[in-house]
Length: 435
Ligand SMILES: [Zn+2]
Image 1 (tube, rainbow, N blue to C red):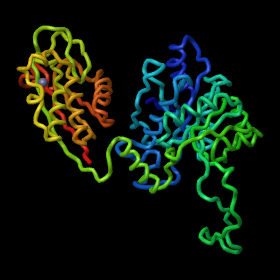
Image 2: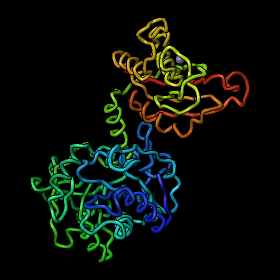
Image 3: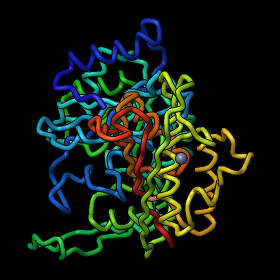
Image 4: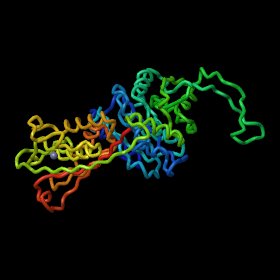
């Protein structure tokens, strides 16, 4: 995640990242803007709502991750968060990497140029993009607090929306009966409201995001310097245009009240296969392997790390995965890795430890358990682990379906056998959730 205080440095970064990999320019790209400058209405812990935790991840991290499911054919070039100048939280965010497009996935950047209204923040993003994107490129605006937009809804939006010159938005038909309320004369109290009439709900839709428009159209809107609209479509409508309504989904809620957060938490748990009322179990694991004095690499967390010797072991000697496996088995009350995969068993000779982990995860699923969190430490003097930590995390997240993986590396300060570079040790702590 790269955070920029000014347009210039962000522009330089994006041009270097995007244009270098695409021979000097991008054709028909799509750019996402997420206005996240809001610090106004807050709830719970006095943290801006986009930074509230939703079962172990912030709402904005989930919103960005869901946008990464935008279809490949949209050629998503970049996701730009527009944050406040005084933002203290953004630097701690971590996002999933999209597998597509650029070497490191779709770049996600934050610009410290958020305004006091949503409109001002979107304007700042559009203004930034006018030097990078072409006027025919699509700009997709998404709320920072809509974490549940699905791949299917994004596909619908793109496939139908990209045919529309005036752009398109996700929206859902109103299902409740729609009343026009009027405050009683002389009262200034929002509780003294009476029904004036019942509207024909048939024609009414509730606007959601993402909303997508050509850059040119957004530039036209902002030329008028009006920033008080509550969504981009209404600004476009003010130009006499008619953006298309594309069926969104009820689940694509905007988290604006503590009630919404509660609903979202339950949905998220359900999505991760966890039902509420779950209890937690904790296990720890430790493993050590000796260097073999032959070989050209070690395997740690499923990552091949070049080194002048390999680790000795019946399997591929992935000491990190072994420690994690033991921690999982410990938390599940399922014994230890030696019982499951005895080293007297010829069929496990040289086996990829990821296979061992896979089998253990399947055993958990049958018992109604899911891995909730993994925290592991690799202890060695060499090789250097840090450059490979992200990749290890990626692999472990994939293998365990746990989005909360942390890998640490340390040395033994040259003390003892690990300190004399005779081998590598690993420790792990794992928590599981059960129904
Ligand atoms: Zn081992």
